[in-house]
Length: 624
Image 1: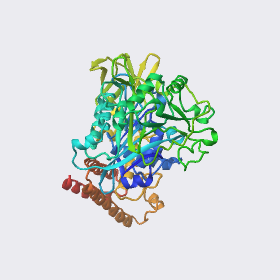
Image 2: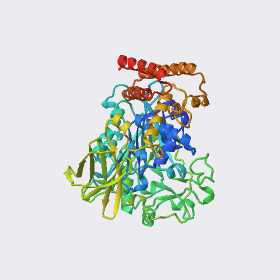
Image 3: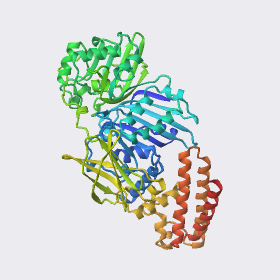
Image 4: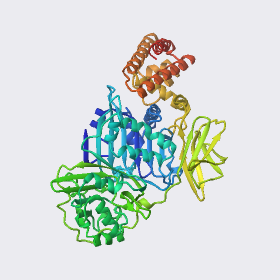
């Protein structure tokens, strides 16, 4: 299915998510640094189909955090976020960054990651796989969700077992966009996009969708930016264009003419929806005063998108209330030529950074990563009824895309060595390392040339793995979360970070309880795990609703344990995806470990557990 352009609830659609299945892997892109609280409280629980949600009650929240941590562990290495290289400090650190791989553009020079692409690999309860593709104007921030209006496109396409080059090519510029995004993010970024290119080989792009992308650099071909849009539109200078964006970049009259020619129109056939200076959105929308003059000289028409505070949103959609305090962050372009109408939903503002500008070296220079989808329009241009803006247009000379970029760097840990890479010219003599227990240490380093980057490899005996690297450059500090490259079992038993408030022992007990619950055990009380309750003796069991008759309780517990083994085996037989099959096998091994540990401590259900251990060992020998 495809949908768009539409005014999106960026969190998603409950019914759609349930039908499509839980998220097995994800690749997200954002301009602003991603907000971990947004991911923890809103996106990940929905995408992972968790039973619990964030709570203000500590006892309940412990189980939620443990469930989320387990879900992240099960998807280890398959969760990725790309963003611009912002300056990150201590306030940007969070425990989930040890489980989600973060990559920053800038490894090959100046670049801005401004695209808003979400790729979600989903698997439903029957094992059917699909790829969800979202292209929108939504950053991974609370402000983007709560304070802004977003427009977007999404499609759900089924995945076949076999892939083909033909299917990959059907996605047009999406595949090379991902390749460029990876290469601009360093070796780890290149590796991160590989699996997504493999998924695109297993599905076909909707026939009515054409991806339009921009990538940083000097370009002599017409694959990117305004030239790519013009090739797809084929307007031949006769197109009518309506533009709705919150940011207009710095344009000259000559640049506006060149952009118009590349897209297939002339400036007087372009209409830009805008707001007056008195409008509340004026503090959020950006139009440099020099660009306002260039628009006027070029005869680009300014439309009265909203005349005053009482007319905030009626021009967007009839269902919206004019009292809604959110402001439009959407980036939508409508094109019309005769009876043919098309619409572009995109991340690209109307700026040379996004669309490109003619370079002195020849060709076109583009600064940003941008991504959009060109679709047939269901109706005529929705802004064509607007009149001219007869009030003073809102102008603001502050361009967000010109904010100070952070230092490009990447750090990874393979269990023995910590590898840190930086851009050339950044060569501090020491690095500060914060380990998994929060201890901070300063280490002397030597840098070596690695292609067009600098690299240092720190090998030592790690009593606790490195979680964060702090690079000091001049007066600035860049805090980089370490990508965990260790074996999944090692990472699971000794994570680089834990949810707040949970000791290693707490987390282990909660994991054991949740693992039994996952395979059909009774839902754990949101207080303490059953295994911990067992340690308090039979009185505690009785208080938790377990039979006071030990022999009866033991028989019931034995049946429950065998039921867990049966459901684990059924899940293993039904697993059609390699990643899921491997995760279920790992779950079986962890169940054995938890149960053996409990037997060694001679806990009350030892006899029942021994029966389950024997059965699970037999099944694992038989089917693995």
